[in-house]
Length: 97
Image (cartoon, rainbow, N blue to C red; front, side, top):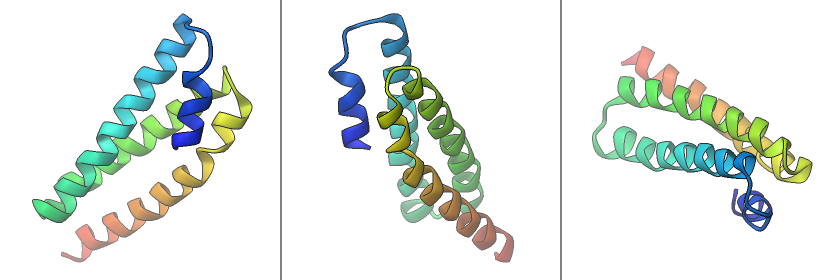
């Protein structure tokens, strides 16, 4: 995530770059909040809803980054795959409880 973000951050300021950074910051905030919701608050259902929103924003980040840097977009694919796996786990835990 860090390298991907840096590749976008160092580009000249533009409307597309600003939008890409905005979407990245939203998904990053969702990432931060998920751990609190799931582990600290033990709100597994809310965490599942939140992680789905995070997954969508990661995908949107990849789409926006791709407009500026193919490498930056590709570097986020493992992150999307990891969050996909975590979403399945979160949903399964919610269903079992």
